[in-house]
Length: 71
Image 1 (cartoon, helix red, strand yellow):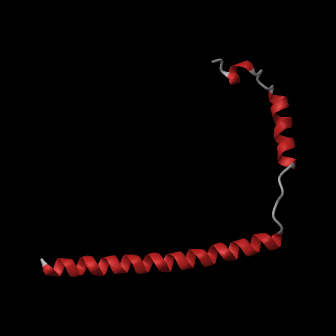
Image 2: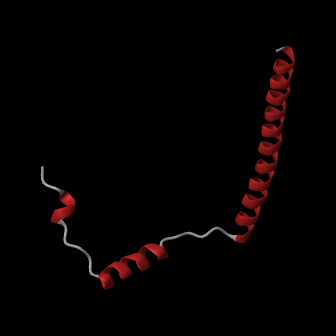
Image 3: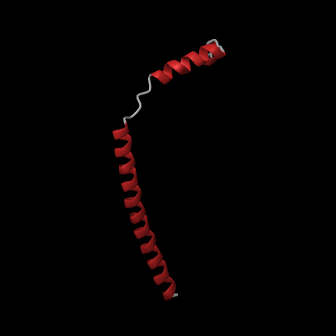
């Protein structure tokens, strides 16, 4: 099978920059309100997951400590 990438002509640097600018114009940036809401959500999730993993780590630590006292 022929390599499709080899068949396509390479873009010139100028053409590449025009393509990049065209793609950049398609970006839909979030509003300030959306950014604040998502930042708060991420902060809350970080706290919740941190507490969860602290609990799991403490539980495993207690189990290992108990098992070591049996030996």
